[in-house]
Length: 239
Ligand code: SAM
Ligand code: CA
Image 1 (tube, rainbow, N blue to C red):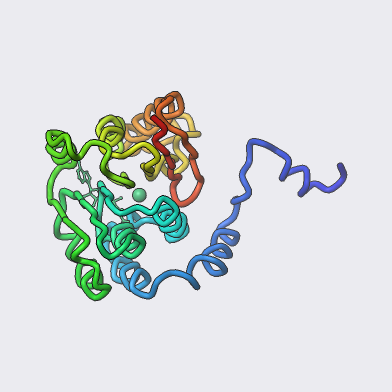
Image 2 (cartoon, rainbow, N blue to C red):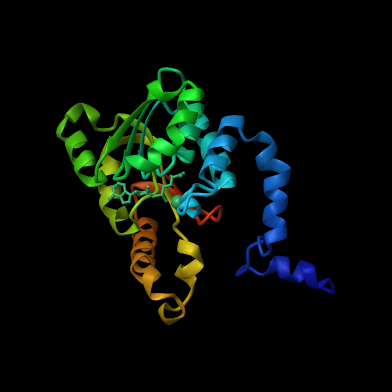
């Protein structure tokens, strides 16, 4: 084959997204023009916050919104709210009688997005719980009626607890339901040797790598590690 760009596309080790320009193209062409106005407002309200990098990437959010609708999600859980981009997105994607249990240790950041959530008229769908997530999941599991009752879960918090969340969510989410884990490429560090990664990122890098390995071997799920945002692993419970 003479054409080098074709040869590059054939290489199985490289994805297509190798430039910021291409990412910008995707955002400008197919994400931003369709992003709901109030989500954009929430994104803008978060932009100057010191933790703004934590906000869910709009392209990943777009896929998540579609998945919520594809599975007709009505009852959902979110672990890791921050200012509420993924939360508002979820609330806008589920029906008017849908319910979200949204857990975060920090209510202050949730309150940055709350006025916009109110403006969107979806606060009634949200049960925000200020807490560590694990005890909340354990409490939900004490009531047998909660088992297999959730359609969808989004996990976007402390990476060293992903496997702990996973065992609990697999009981809470129904067969056929979807669980999404965010940041499963952990800023690209999963593919770098540990010594090439800054020390503050190493612990969660190891956790994410262990999680990815474990989930790949988990026969209770179908999975897809979609390289959107910082990597999101989409899981469908199959048994
Ligand atoms: N999904 C959010 C969005 O779209 O803006 C971003 C979430 S941010 C990456 C992670 C959040 O997880 C932070 O707000 C943090 O307070 C919360 N968090 C960290 N550890 C937690 C824990 N053990 N239990 C509950 N929330 C936690
Ligand atoms: Ca995230």
